[in-house]
Image 1 (cartoon, one colour):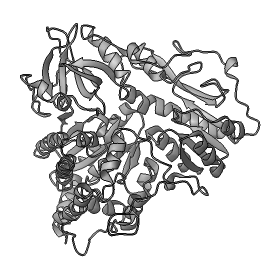
Image 2: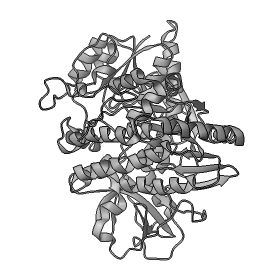
Image 3: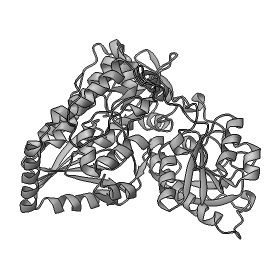
Image 4: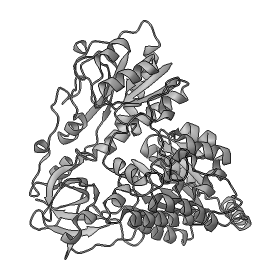
Length: 596
């Protein structure tokens, strides 16, 4: 079937639906919603048999839904309406929620119903982003596949909404949630404050005041019970600050200053000099026993011959500090007498590479970007050169750009079913993370170049066919953990592990071109992107951080046969061709390294 995804942004859910439908053999394209005229012209050019809207904030023009079957995937159960569905569900403590596939009509979320799913919501308030990338994404994909099947049945007629009773408590028309609805006082109970913040995570955050700074708070975690005046800063750790509440304390990981142009960054960075006198609470992933409400982004434990190093960075972004802490923990784990080391990222995101928000907010973004790429490269090198253990990189969440490349140097790459990988750089950067060494060795030089150039999401099914990953585990996080344990145990056989480590050591020793050459070549290209801005990194970074809409849908996402309008690559100085043509082929052994 010829299917068009009409979306406000090609986000994680949209990418997952796009991948699944393509894997099922459908012809799938994307149209980013712009003005009404742009949507009308884009749909006409695509001429789809079905339009699906997995993530759409805009109204579908009447001329579109009247002519083309258009189905909206709404993140709420039957009867729910409004743009703040998940916000209200979390804020009100709903224990069951859902997704409904509705045909587009004049009134928002009121059309005939094609499909619906419900799911349980944890009692502990989840972050809105976690609920969206987890249960909502799963339910939406199931609805999308059901809609496509029904669209192929000429006898199917969707059920009018008025004929389908609401069965989920709390579902119904709700207004847009505003800051007045989200407001809290630091004297409120910890659970109340955390629920308010998590209902607004990662957008728009909750406006509050921390140490005299008016800001939007995100990334909240319960802290230890402390007796102090509510709102007092009690400590700081790994970018987060501990704030006293009415009955304890709360860790706040990220703040977006309310001033014009404020960027969401780690709380300690946002507060700066306001933290003078606030005690630092350093923690090592391997030295401090696990305690309730301990705030830590990296943890290490071992079970017999297996070491487990887990890291979970907000939105998968890795600033230099994240990289340094992960490198320290990684070196500690490698020094142990285990036979297998499992490196596992977060369920929302494994990694998305360097921290663009921190870079954009820095006084000197170029210097910050250079420091960031050098720091993440150190982590990649440590993984590639590890011969003391069999290294398993466990992608439990989506990954993008350098975050995909991060784990490719492992001996085994295992992914949770249903995650999406974006193994390319699309923000005016050549890319580093030693990808010119690891990527061709996994998928071959020709496939590596295609992945970099095509700039398309990759499903786990595709990734395992390409050789990008080795194993696919169950979708459910707990089932994935159990599966991963069995996988690690299988690789921990003493004889097999010893042979594998020895083979890797021989391979590294036999390399004609050392790793330094690959990194030097990458950094030479990156220096031109970062300091000379030859490919528009500064503008692209700013647009990403501020969530600006692209001027048009990228050509590679358009439905086949639809060729315009598209984004035009910007030529770099001294080259009449487009910026995307500047990249030399990714080869296994470049004959001559490029030196800055």
